[in-house]
Amino acid sequence: MVQQESLVEYGPRRVIITITAIFCALLEIVDTTIVNVALNDMKGNLGATLNEIAWVITAYAIGNVIIVPMTSWLSAQFGRRNYFAASIIIFTVCSFLCGNADNIWELVFFRFVQGLGGGALLVTSQTIITESYPPEKRSMAQAIYGLGVIIGPTLGPPLGGYIVEHYSWPYIFYINIPIGIIATLLTIQYVRSPKYAEKKATKDIDWAGIGLLALAVGSLQFVLERGQEEDWFSSNTITTLAVTAVFGIFFFVWRELTAKNPIVDLRVLKNGNLRVGTILSFILGFGLYGSTFIIPLYTQSSLGWTAQQSGALMIPAALTTAFMMPLIGKMLQKGARQSYLVALGMLIFFIYSFWGYKILTPDTRESAFFWMLIMRGIGMGMLFIPITALSLSTLKGQEIGQGASFTGMMRQLGGSFGIALITTFMASQNVVHRSALVTHMASDNPAVQQRVQRLQQTFIAKGMAPDVALASAYKALDYGVMKQAAVLSYMDVFLYIGLMFLFCIPFVLLVKEKKNVKVDLSEAMH
Image 1 (cartoon, helix red, strand yellow):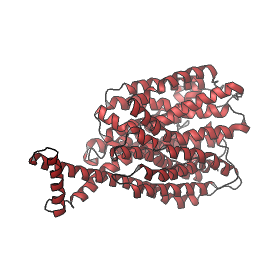
Image 2 (cartoon, rainbow, N blue to C red):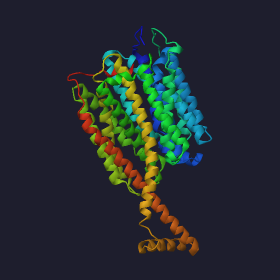
Image 3 (cartoon, one colour):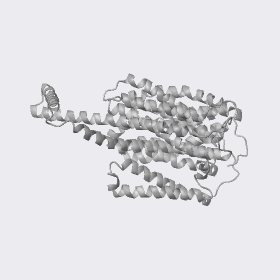
């Protein structure tokens, strides 16, 4: 992609373009997590299971991942302004269709298509903002964009909670419609397309790579989501799709390494720092989206909080991250080592996760979460920009853009796989913990008998017949066991996410950095 003219804007025009692009990016980012606090309402309204409702999030993420590598070609083929406007329209129309979905799989399909439009919003808005500023002010553009990327997922739950509490879950999609219409009109009026040296012919596009990527990611995602429910490899469907995912990944890698115009240039992974950076980006996505998914789920299902209460809980973390981002940017500009900042950020995220592991109970108070989530905000603020800088620190020229695209895709994949693995892991751990708890509750155990008798007397006092009261007592006891098993499963999730971050620290510290080399992250946006 070669530009023939400057796209730098000045005055009110640049302000309008910046606001339009930021709103579009935030629409996409917030929509990734805004549904988290509405999952319980959706589940009840649409008659879905926990595993099925998780597809509302993961289908959107898969759409993002598939479209991101294709964005630069689509921009060149149709013109950036036209492609950006079309993406906003797709996103907006699908927002309306998601709100009107009658069943879970209809909603999942529209979320997938919405993700195809949303992925383009994220990548293209980044480029539009950067190219609207002169080179000496592009660090400001990077700060504006980076702040949105990292706090956007955290702002989703509070906004979603308010909407669900005061209206109903379809309105988390309907709020996109007026913003989308205004953004479309402003894009058509103000955004300029660069002139491209040439357009790739349709026959030159790596259609096989696109197909293999979609097949591999889709199959793997289905296995992760449905494996527990289908009893894993005892199911022919799961076995078939697991084999499809393995071969899909193998042939995708082979295709991208041999194609003339690969849709994802894997050759750039010869760079050691980028290899480490892609893994760290995957883990960052896993932690960022996974923890944003798990906390509202726990507070609503185990603690009985409202959607608004669950969402508001995340605000301190978002504000802390917003405060940390510019400080970390300044530290990097002054020569702070990226690997040290990443390692410290991972240590802080481990502390946050272990803290969560220690405080979770069936009746944890709201005040217990405050400082834990402040730690999350600090950790996330210290990870995003340094991981990007570390990944790109030894790349040159066009490689920087390829590397940035790859780390962005891996971050999104990390979030998608993280949510799938967490739901599957929790379903499995629920069974394990419930079985372990039941072994301590034999019917001939005096303590159990006393507990049942007390519950029976309580129900009799409320007017129940003795036999009905006894059945209700056993049901209440079973409910208590299930609730305790669920809390133990949430604890396991926090512990293992924390250990994953902790184990990465030594590898991060081994990464080599070029001294006195500053990475121009604005180049990563092209």
